[in-house]
Image (cartoon, rainbow, N blue to C red; front, side):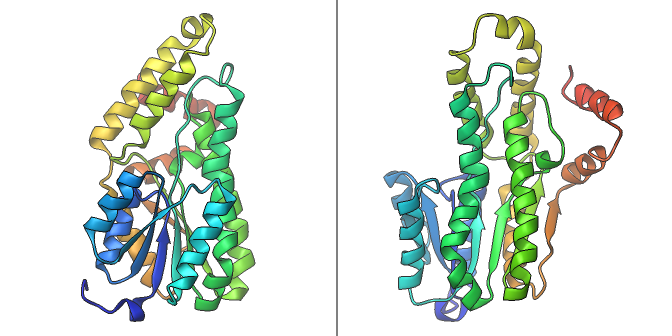
Length: 284
């Protein structure tokens, strides 16, 4: 498939392509023959992606900046190829006790994970409509079940899921398929980055924070480290994305991995039972 003419396959745009899930998706789609516009924020990542495959076209793209979103849309348009899919992958994980979480961190969580993907989709919708393409969103099974210390992340993914449900119904008459991808732990740098940012936020917390929430914070750190080690391979997510682009009738939601399917069932349990199971899983 690597040599297949991109003129036949068309173009795709993947956000957050510098590492982890986004990098695997971008590389897989490039190898499949798509001209793959890969959104990154650092110049060093641009060069690394450009060297990874001849079908990769790195773009400087901060999805929260309107000018960057418009530039990305124009870059795809100027390629002259139909846009087959937009993969909204870029995201961050904000963690910490809600009682003391700084307002700017909470706002940042929703700006990046919830609002910006919808705004970028708006910028590219004319092209997706023209090609009967796909708008694909990386969600999380955390959007179905709130966990202690990661409320902002869970809430941002829950809100995104709701918006995606509405968008899917609105765009169905226009021939644009919309899908959400939900999974649990993945071997990706997002949680390591989240821990680093969490340490920065912790410097703003009052002293009593760790008296009240120290056990839960420690449990979250330990849990995220376990998940990084034993989570899904990003390649499995990339495989599901490619399938959704190429299937005649993609699913509305893709739940990937046994852990995600179990958590989806836990989310349906009575609240008290659910809370006990979560506490046990986090070793609280």
